[in-house]
Length: 59
Image (cartoon, rainbow, N blue to C red; front, side, top):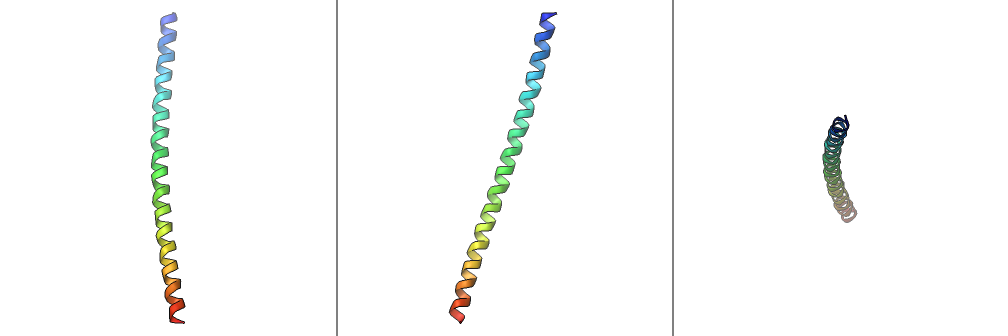
């Protein structure tokens, strides 16, 4: 009886461990996506600053 209880707890812990690893993977994907967005925003910011400098020189 007690052995079955420990086996059930062991199975539940392994499921929780798997779920946590999935969550960890999803968070790493989100982190990567955010870094890509950050890079894209920095490129846009750079392009806008270059564009503003060109417009100022033309005036």
